[in-house]
Length: 176
Image 1 (spheres, one colour):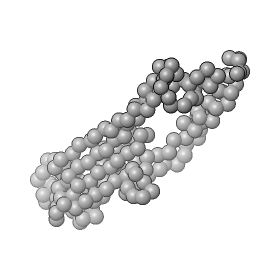
Image 2 (tube, rainbow, N blue to C red; image 1 turned 90 degrees about the vertical axis):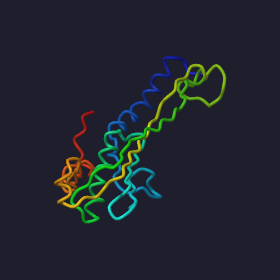
Image 3 (cartoon, one colour; image 1 turned 180 degrees about the horizontal axis):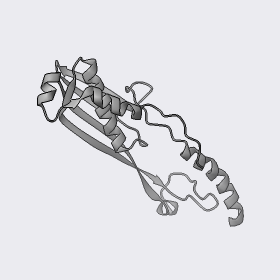
Image 4 (tube, helix red, strand yellow; image 1 turned 180 degrees about the vertical axis):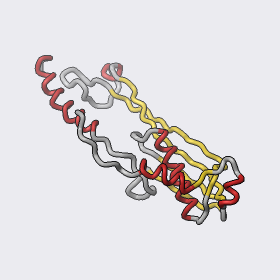
């Protein structure tokens, strides 16, 4: 068993790479869901002028990003269908939270341990992990209809403003 003075260098050896990895997070994925991506958007045409659009993020995607990507995809669907504007008929964002248990383990192996019931389990804590899913039903509007409807959004303008958020930006110099 290692003494307390020998555990710190080992722990520091693991902490350094983890700290650096946390500084280099990937941008959220913007694209369709599929076999390679459980995150992303889906859309379904309900009738000539109604679509259901959704975007699902992963545990690293903030709620605001999920809602922004839903808005962007709604605008793209509108333009692809040949319409100028759209409005939301219904819209909602749901949070799905799961809790994972972390514990300190047993003496000599601080931070590591097997999942088991007993005294080691009492020294742990619960870690929430939340994923967001935003969905909406949209109504496509012609240019004339969009001008008359105060809730209408201009699909081209929305796309122009939000598309840069979905594109990975050039890497910035490391500040760590």
